[in-house]
Length: 385
Image (tube, rainbow, N blue to C red; front, side, top):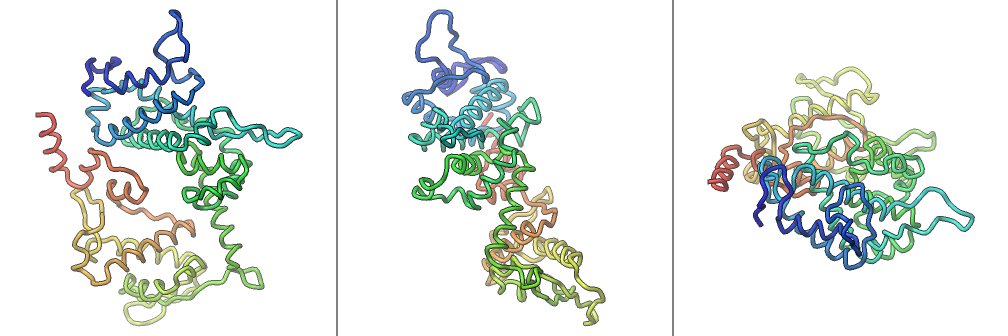
């Protein structure tokens, strides 16, 4: 599938031709162009859905195996402008498919968009479209091709509204795990929020996502009855020796299980075995979390290795450092969840390829350089020689 056009010009690549077919109107005359822009709207038929699904799957695979030279220098199979057009067209199509207007008639919610056959009858097409959008978004994060800060925020006024946020809160914390019967019992507006959160969360403004997450946390605390009779949250007092922060944290906090979501108050013991003065009103716990994270992710403990760029990732030989290394990794995951629930900001130097795995993303060819610059350089040499 080599592109036959020079950089910056539309190519005759198979995917480029397939994309043009997807955008062609059902009936054409001599005055209609075979080329379309992101602003054009088309009525996708069932046959067109099959072509669109084929395009999305093929383009997603191509994006995962292409490097920045292919996408931005050689610009194949699409020019940078065409990448923007594809991103906007898919984003608009997906938004139209899932968005339910907030206005209601006397009979209730308006009928869902006619584009909803994309989801209702062609869930595989919706999933393929969402994955392609996600891969394009990742490409844009690595090296921006978007021409404005709001490029990905299609319909941001509606999606950032309080009504949408409340829909997302009612959907629950795991929209990706909704079963078929659960989807059937949801209102159209809740399905809208679930599909956006599941497939294209980046189309939701960050502040709106932060509000949704905060309300999920508050809702869970209410559901689990974490407040005592006086209205104060229950909590746990934990004694930590400063010289053994990592070891004491694992011993005293790992056994809490789900109770780790409750407030934790820290009493520090100094190097002389004397309890440090002061009452933890939240500040001491934040200090503890910062020190704990710094030590836990240090290569000195043998759980993580450091790249030549100073970023960390799990050490493949961590079992040599500790027989219970898997339990320690699980505990670190809980502690990362704790800082998210408590709203504590901690800077963690994760290597990008490791962070991608945490986020459920596919690593690109160029992500190899975050692990080993020399291997990445040699691979590119072999590819281009």
